[in-house]
Amino acid sequence: MRSLHVDEYNHDDCANEYDEDVKNELSDPIRAGYEATLQWVVDYANVNEKSRVLELGSGTGNLTRKIKTCREIVCVDISTKMEKLGATKLSHLANRSFIEDDILEILIKDIGFFDTIVSTYTAHHLIDEEKKVFFKRIWNRLSPGGIAVFGDLMLETEASRKLQIDSYRKRGEETTAVAIEEEFFWVVDDSVLELEKTGFDPVDVKRFSDLSYGIGAKKPASR
Image (tube, rainbow, N blue to C red; front, side, top):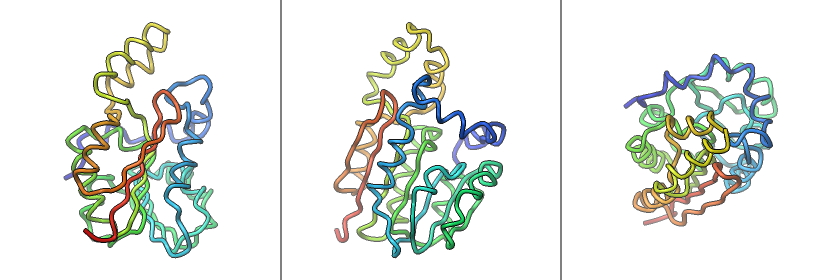
């Protein structure tokens, strides 16, 4: 099962501008909280020299470069242009490999099991039903006791979606309003419930800006 909009959201066309774009945290609500979100994901993941890590949506390597050491890291992205830029930042990770693939489809391929799975600013391109499949497939790829950590564009509740769209539009932030309308921002309440139904315990949430959140979910060592 390949995600429905993966080719639509291939960022090859904006790869060269991406790293400058994400620095606009003060002027762009979509980018607000970006660095803090990435750092929290890395801190929560608690990767060490024994960890086998899967990163879904590695982009230009902004999250990967914050990982200091690991046994192995497999990075997945659909954009080879972003990967080309990212690879220049990551020479400190000797056991890093890259797979060009859809973040949903890769999880049913023969890639083994992982201690840690991380994903930032990517899964908001999955529709709601795909996110449910995504969580289940991540569960199946995690070793017992493993951790999944996400940082992404999210809304607190489904009821807040229209309120956020109207609020940004009234402030003249049309680009942000359209992004919320057209993309598939996570709904925090629904995502936490789905992760818990999948079996993750605990599931922790941290907010970094109006639209950026982190969610950390642990797979129990035994059930």
